[in-house]
Length: 479
Image (cartoon, rainbow, N blue to C red; front, side, top):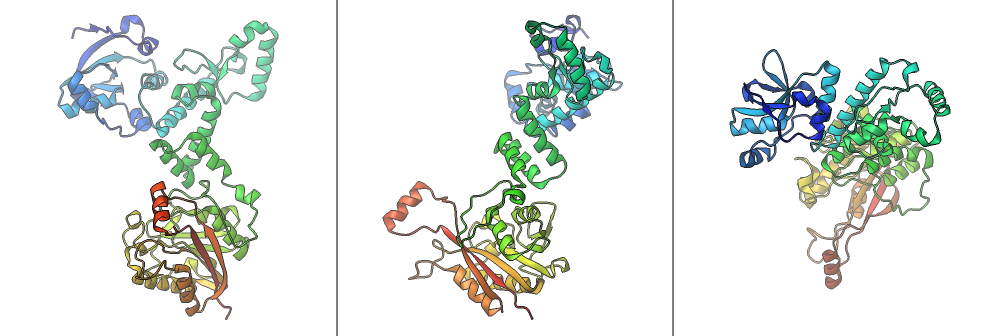
């Protein structure tokens, strides 16, 4: 097979190969298979619109491959390979390389895939590998050779120290280095740390942002539900690294800085440090104040409609035990259960407080799982809630509390001649009928979420928009 000289050499490939080895050759697609590390780093990468691009203008960049016993492994260009297979192509142009060992092979994979578009998770998996490679390099060097230092071969050719270098040895070495250099040369000779270089390599800016990203990623790798939710939002572009880190850092602020509101009007904004995104999620402050006034540390709290898990997270911060149930669990610690159909499991029996934030009939119906209480009309909805209250009363210990967060109805399904439906009043009557004792009705104003056209229409039609919900707290009598 006649090798063709590569006419459009990039600086990236020049970093990888000697000039004499830069050549491209056509290779049968059937002989090409992706290196397993590509799947580890980038997952099942879809070819997206690459097939149409290849069909229109052909292959512009060659694959980077390594010759194996049977065929070739693709080190860079797996998406092009998938797209070519979709088009039924028989071969692709590729550069055949021969790394000296697996260590070099992994660096080549990282470097040759540097320009591809990546999600947050893909960038952090690259960072994990870089940290591992640099750590391996550092193990092979003695502390006496720190002036040479383990080199992180990032893409500008600069060197840096590994972030795991022992602090004492580093200080001793750098002190010695400073004593032998002039101020003019010290800055240039001073090696940079690996977190700075890795941040640059994966496109996350400086070391501070990288360290924030690393903290979020580490929590997600430990299966922290809130961190996993943040990573999902980061992958989708719906959240910044700083916002995700801020939420992570603030998650325990209720344990250290909580100041209960002494009034019966609780106005709180959503706090994304607690709970994950979920339809109809509520501010953590409402849950925190409810637990403060109606439970004690160590008490058992149950949320049978746990949603995004706000109650679980707040309870953990305030040293309360908590069980979460839901028709469609969003987190591993939330158990599958439908309280509208059957009583709570035995694990909930004897609980000190049940917190309920039920969906409304016909509202946000498409956002909830099939079988939700929102599937019912207004009359049936109240009958279902009555059954839920009965199940709750069975589980709550004598003297325990039930807290129900509910808003008035001001828009849909208003009876003729009525201006609104006072759900809080109606549900309180049901609870009293079931034998509960009223304890408090707390006003919980909502954040304004109305569009300008809705506000204008309200003014023209002289109709007030609903902006208030109520927390009804009742107590089970002591027998």
